[in-house]
Amino acid sequence: MGANLSCATLCDTNGEGPSSKPRLGDIPESCLALVLMHLDPPDICKLARLNRAFRGASSADFIWESKLPSNYKFICEKVLDEKSVVGLEKKDVYARMCRPYPFDGGAKEVWLDKNTGGVCFSISSKGLAITGIDDRRYWNQISTEESRFHAVAYLQQIWWFEIDGELEFEFPKGMYSLFFRLHLGRSSKRMGRRVCNSEHIHGWDIKPVRFQLTTSDGQRATSKCFLDYPGNWVYYHVGDFVVDRPCELMKIKFSMTQIDCTHTKGGLCVDAAFVYPSTIGTEICKLNKLAGQH
Image 1: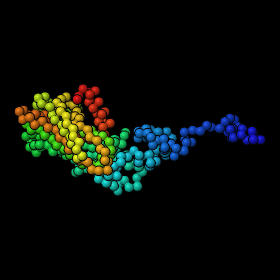
Image 2: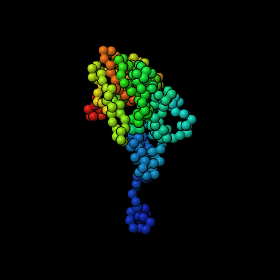
Image 3: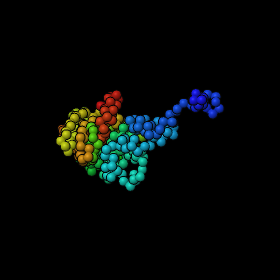
Image 4: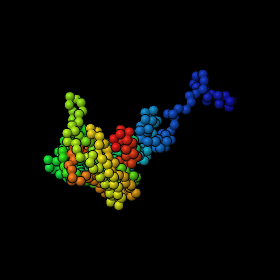
């Protein structure tokens, strides 16, 4: 009889064959969630489309809290409207923080890299201290779709070239890279095509630009580089810094100078300064080299 019962359990209701084998959808959501926690956000989102079990498991708060940066509450308090995230699932908090959010009067932005959860920053040209910026003989603010801030500072000609910036924030632990995004020449659209006016470009091939970076805990980096590749936006690497104390404010100061007054220089668009986790910064440097830009 026991054999008959055993056989019955292996047969379907019609007695025609074995019952269906376990499927992915039969795995408990709690087990799936433990696996998903070890994946990157894009992979979690892909697996969430497999079936209902994966979709439910992918929404677990503990998964997305592990993907949020350690300072996400500080970002919510300083930049986001904290009330707008109260009661949201951590998955939705993550998605919301992947959008750029302005702060410091709109001159700076912070967001999460959607692939890694790394914290990224941008400081617009209006958020930088640019020598002579208020003198129209030297500088102009021009509108453009090629900037995330929809405007860049354009240098026609100057003897003393100096740009300073700073950023104070609670950074998550890790290494970061700082870049200036620059463009030789003034681009525009003509008959639907992008063209670059190189009329004012001069002086950058005589002496290199000096980049500097310092932090409030004593780190320092310097580099020099000739500006080149007219008509292309180039990310110029200023330097790297390390954050060991993630729960403390750190101030970084950075600059770009070419103050040899034996010659003028001009024809430069300054978009913004960017701070990225160094994993992203390394990829930017690789792309620059592949493009033969820097």
